[in-house]
Structure formats: structure tokens, C-alpha cells
View 1: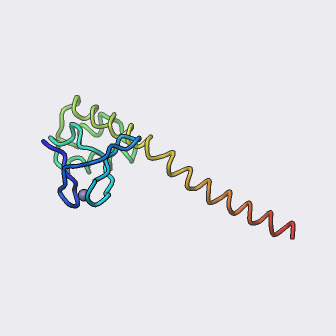
View 2 (view 1 turned 135 degrees about the vertical axis):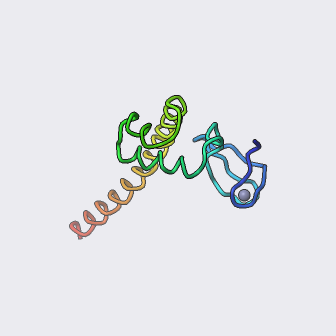
Length: 110
Ligand SMILES: [Zn+2]
């Protein structure tokens, strides 16, 4: 299955440092399709919500109709994607807080 942009259906991309793709047409950024294409969106959504609730693999297996091999593979991919996102999120928060501290210090000095 060839990778296409979800927004404009373009097939030309730049590859970003974090492994995501950036569309050359509309500059949309997204994670490339890996082996997740064989699983339905509904099922994937269900797995992600179970995973976020920190349910164990066996509990997820009972609730979702999927093979253990496939589930473990998806969970590994999810973890990789999540660790990629977290540092960006934190750096955003830290920057905001640092700015506040800076402004507060400035007020005290005045
Ligand atoms: Zn696009």
C-alpha cells in the first residue's frame, strides 16, 4: 500500500527527523503507515483506549478480537510513538514556565 497524504492524497513527502512525513503539497505532518494498515481504525482506537487506561496485555486480548502477536506489535509501536511525542510536549510546558519565572523576576527587580 502506497503512502498517501490524508488531507490532499499527495504521494510526495519529506521525511522528518522524528520519522514522520511532511507532505510536499499541503505541509501536513503525519506518521507514516507502518504495519498498522491491516488493522481497522475502529479496532486500533479500541486498543489505544485500553492501552491508555493501562490495562494489561491479557485484559486487552480478552476485550479486543486480535492475535497476541499483532497486539504486542501494535503496543510496541504505540510506545515508540508516545516517547517521540512526550519530549516535545514537555519542552513546550517548560518554555512557558521559564518565561513566567523570567517575567516574575523582572517585576521583583523593578
Ligand atoms: Zn497533503
